[in-house]
Length: 276
Image (cartoon, rainbow, N blue to C red; front, side, top):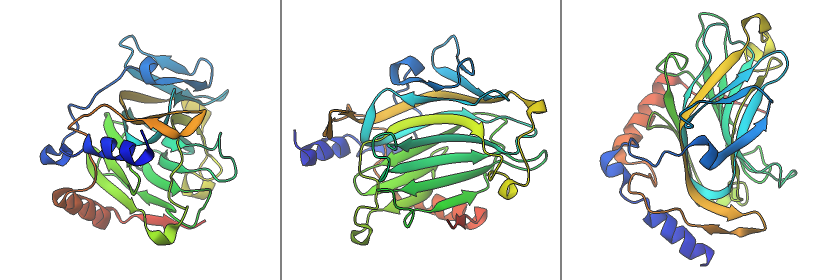
């Protein structure tokens, strides 16, 4: 099957999602079905149900996990509950990257959660890099309309040939469309999914003025409701991918109703462009 046919099959599988506007019936997988331990021996714990994972940061190390497959486009999601109380300097990330394969011209699509001092809210940051370029999709940083340490919330990435959308609880918060002017600066190479927790004391909170305090460790981030719905790629044949099974609840873009929600979010939460 050629790349155009794969793209057609993948997008055809996604057409119906926004008629209902919910992802509650999406195919949830167990951790071992889709992910593997990445780093931080002993700081990753798979719960008994097999569908929930805790990753933690302590003075010894952070931790993380990575998808077993590479993907070329798809819809990727997890429900996440962040650490509470004093979390300054702590970074939790849920992201896509291929830096291990393309060190000098990698692609990246990121959710990053930045901890804070007691009484201050977590900040969420989105990043998009294509072909190693930082001239497109610079970081945007926002406040949320809820406390992400009190309960689980769903964070999702839609990545197609021409569109990237970040969702929080099915509300789109950021969109990037591919344009001719971008050239190769739009993410277009297969990527893996990652989740990590680590010490970002040098920059994460108020420009590095507040550091991780390990007297509050371990810092534990909880993950569940894993969705990996995309074209899985053979690492030896990066131009070919297996089209994801059809599922009517997968989005393909932003409807008018969801666009209004995104615009309202961005007006109220005043995204800050982080210049590099």
